[in-house]
Image 1: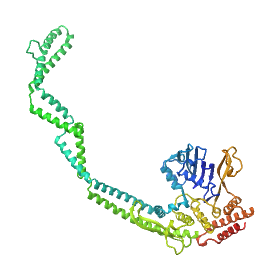
Image 2: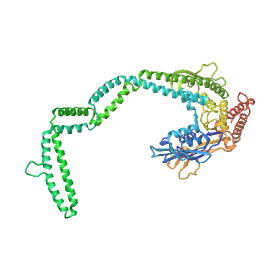
Image 3: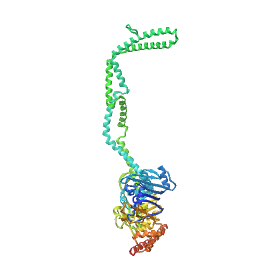
Image 4: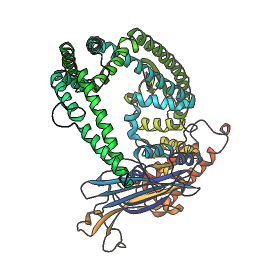
Length: 617
């Protein structure tokens, strides 16, 4: 339930605070008085569209704040969204807008002071408020919206089956996409299979094993290409280290003499022992190096055939690197990748036949789910037809016909049904699609009756009706008033109306009007709008709560036809409407068996009183 609404610098409203109550809340006022601005503010607070023109001229910031009664369902939703409670009784939804006079600069929504995204605010909106207006005739005429209405009326079982259809449809579409993708890529798959098989054959023939093979082969090629030089140089090193055939002594000989001398010296001074140890170790290393270089030189042999083999291997590996490289490590990794890809192309994936079977199986599941959904819809359609016709009869449409046509259509995520609301308001006339048959007044009554059908299944706390009574008068207006009050038993109802019969049924009545003020003196009395010529004069929207019989009577008289001959007649007329409204509210509380199926006589008497008063002021 909407508890209160605070508005700052929104459209023509400079500052306004409204407190709403349970039951039927009515907003009245002349055409253009600003009633729609209040509804637009509620819409804006709940994520509705706003522009820079939504902010009052001259202001840079606007704020709308709606406070709702906290319910267990809303408390659970807040917990799911990780939004803390302000208290145990209320939830506050606000929207702050800023502008640079030409462009909306920012718009930020908050719930209990926490900034939320558009998805969250839309979820909250669907839980707290539902707006019905005559302009919805375009929306209600759309087959998809009619289908959604029927499904919502069907309740949890139908909505659960619709979710099952959605899941089956999604699975079926995925299977079809895989099948079509496989069909379209079969030629490309075969071409790629041939290419990968050729590449793998070439790479397998190369026997790639060691990433460093090229470096090792290059070293071996250098050795095989310089065998003679290496033999000659190794002999020279051997002579220099171990055994010199020339006149000069080898390093081993020189170190041997030094060692012998140091041995004699140590006999006289043991401090030389470390030096002796180093020379002895050097001598041993030189002798070992000489033996090893000699063995290396003797082991060298020229091998032209091996050299040719190594060079050919190097050429082959470099060719592989140019094609699959840039180095052997990358070529080896590529070999492993194409082996895996080949396995998938050769049979790792599912064949077209298998994919076709999967698709047909999922399609059959979808068809069965759609059939179950259709059956539930037919059952819900019959109940909706009966309840809607019953709801329209008190609205001066006793002979109305209504039928929900369910025609087969290709399966979609919402089922395999095309839903059409067929309507005939006049006896003897055939059924036609709703929007092609219903007049403006008939559409207003249809929307109201349709909403009444959802009273028991709709958890929304506040229902808003924006001039749903346009195009009706007299007896029909009284019936609409009764229907709105019936709705207000289960929901809070907020209604914008021009009908005195409806306004008289209100539990809370608000009068909306425009006022011209001088910004230099906001207390100046009302001025005529045509006087607003200078920059100090502004137009604002004001709302008065009509809390007593006198003010309500005067407003009802204005709604009925303007000024009366005397204040006494005006007051008497308003009092009469209020008395009749009280009587109707009391009768609605009586058991059904004690109520007449037709409109009460007192309502007809009210119509006659209205006609007499307007014709003889």
